[in-house]
Image (cartoon, rainbow, N blue to C red; front, side):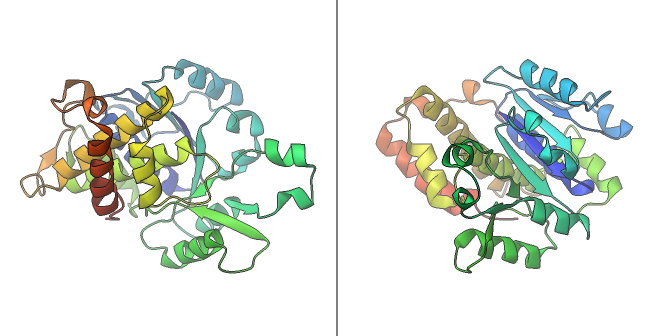
Length: 295
């Protein structure tokens, strides 16, 4: 999976680090391409590589995307909001997120995620169908007003010429010194849980790029749908993340520093060996009860 996180301040890096740590619990390699602090690049972290970026040019990003072509690998790219207009890079990504911690970067991130509700009125049908999926807005924990505005714009309850897709997640507001802790080899269970939750949501929106919104029912459907190889891969990952979320939610895990549990290939329970009925039951319980609990 190839994810672009677009931001003009620290919120983008926080979201990228949380996402990478959540994806790493799958036991799959994750690489972050960003302007990382030297303290972060020097920290060893299981399944995560953050070599820093000697160049963030289009060519460098495209080479990194090609190197992440392995279906079991993930790439997270952090770019400024102005680079959203670069369709050449956007077309190589599975989905794009926008985030901003402080004003005016937060307001720019929200505006950047807007899209026209009826694009066919101002462009040809072929051009409208070929356009890139709009990015998803990721609010921060102190931005209840921006989250409300984005949510209202996504429901269609208010008649507006534009809409915004917002994910049901809020990025913690961390200072520059606290960001380094997200790259530590071991994390508190609650922090790793937050990363697992974000990874689950991003996997879901990448699986359905043109979805207007994401909710527990949509996540449960992705977990239970296993007809095609790609669907089974998404289902297995979501089920594994749900199991990891539950493990971290256990009282014995809370308050302790955690490493990721065994990757799916080494766990005794394999999602692919369950019956369809069991998958649906796990999906309903895990997704609606746990995966969309915002910490």
